[in-house]
Length: 216
Length: 71
Image (cartoon, rainbow over all chains, first blue to last red; front, side, top):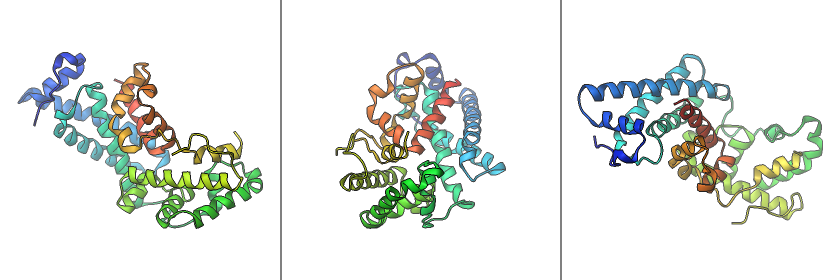
């Protein structure tokens, strides 16, 4: 394993100590790895519990996700120790790995007991997705019908499938990314382009005011 | 906020939006800057725009902020 290249003098004391201990050999490094792993487990458990209301994963499976995330994050941290450039505290850099692992694993576990299925097309739930007051659903009907028309007629097939899954059916983006074998960033770009296309159509047809920030 | 405003806000896209990969690559720096009271959004406007629009990345930011704040 390579040791981080940043001079210890440029680091805060705690970060420098972590690098020194993890970059050495024998008992010191073993103790440092054990301590770091314990911290990653603690953070992962807290994170899965924080996210519990928004995921169908529950109970012991949630704890399993946390322990797996901590283990995988630990391996990634040790493998990428040389990439740490001291732009943040070491511990924040390390925790980023475990938070992202928790995200990715909850996305994968979503499909074991999914509350929504792919391609369901639950358009009747769209007002709720946008947080529209049930008493005002009728007033919004024309606008939402136009959104659906644009989705049906102006989006590409891929944009339509992704928009419907995420926005209409409420499938988490990370879970959909797993199902479609795509990266989060790729799906976000699809949704970004779909939002822009829908907005332009709504503006062109007089449903919304002229574009604001959306210029490119 | 009216229903129209809520929908408009959802559909609005920000050309500064850095995307998920770029935001996640500097998330640890963004979080430490935020915790230190620095101008994280000013230094990384593309990340700030992205975190306002991307639910999953915003969740990661919230989680890392909470984790790092406890240290």
